[in-house]
Every structure is written in C-alpha cells, then in structure tokens.
Image 1 (cartoon, chains in turn green, orange):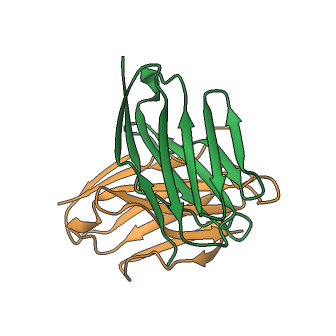
Image 2 (cartoon, rainbow over the protein chains, first blue to last red):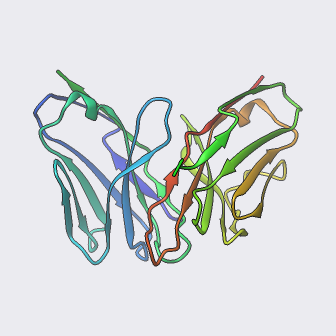
Image 3 (tube, rainbow over the protein chains, first blue to last red):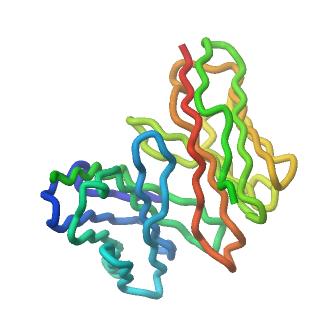
Length: 113
Length: 115
C-alpha cells in the first residue's frame, strides 16, 4: 500500500544552523506534499506544502524541494531558532482525489541555543 | 474562525465502556478526517467524509469503532467497547473544497486513556 518514509527520526542542531528532513513516498499518483509541525500537546499545523507541478517552494526560512522522478521530497529550515523545536511530519496524498494523507513517522527537531 | 473544535480534550475510561469523541469542523469545509496518533503507529487515518458521506473507512481498526457525520457541522467517533490498546490521541481535521485548497486543518486532539 501507500507508504511514506521519513528520516531522520531525531535531529539536533545549534541555533543558526540549517536543518534538513527527507521523505520518500511510494504512490506515484501522489500530487500533494504537505509538511506539518506539531508542538507538545497540540495538533499538527501546516507550515508549507508543495504540489507535483512545482519543484521547489520557499517561505522565509523554510523551503521544500520535490523530485518526482525519485519520489522524494525534503524540508529545509535555515537559521534555526529554539522555537523551531518540535516534531515535523511529512505527508503525501492524491490531493484532488479525496485528500487522504499518508504521514511519515515524524522527526523530532531540537534547536539548542 | 475558531478552528476545528474537539471535545473532550481528555478522556479516561475503563475497559469495556463506550467512548464518544466529538468534532466540529471549520464552517464551510467540505471534508472531515479522523486520525489516531500513537508512538508505535504514528499518525494514521481512520476515516474521512466528503459532504457528510463516508468515503474511506479502511483505517478503522475493527467493528468496535464507528463514525458518523449527521450534518456539516458535527461528527462523532465512537468506540464500543473500549480496550486499553485504544489509548491514543485522536485528531479531527477538516478541509475546504479541493478547488480552494488541499490544506487540512487539525483540531487540538482528544487524549484517550483506557484503563
């Protein structure tokens, strides 16, 4: 069935450094790839997303890249800050066809001051 | 808008009892999703509705779980009878029509503990 693999499971960086999280997906029909940030005790919150007709998207310090041929996509956070510490999830779906999200296992990011 | 509203936020119950989780989606959204989050299995979709109609319930673990959406502003997830392995955080999410956006908005979750 559909599967999304996410790496690494934990990531520790120094404040100001960059952080990269990578995901691969199995369903070649997937066309929508969101990234969610989950803080302790809260629900996941969308931070950036990308559709399959775009290779890269940027929003201030965060960016996502997509390689459809290789079926992988990555989240890049630059100039990390302590408030970036959280669990990050990637997901994939056939966006226009119902919207069922298949999530990766999550990455716990820790930004040390 | 208040966002997706879930109740209760915390539920502690004994094995064998019936549990009902509630969700109010964002007004105007067409789709509603129920997810379960555990350490072992991560975030997994249980069921989703489009325009109040169940579309995919393949993630519902077994017959003890049932979900309803009687109208566009309310949904329930019921577990009867509950078991300790049902302990998890249950999230509800809603989404507008896909012509507008694919983004799913998550509620704060219900933490369920079955003893």
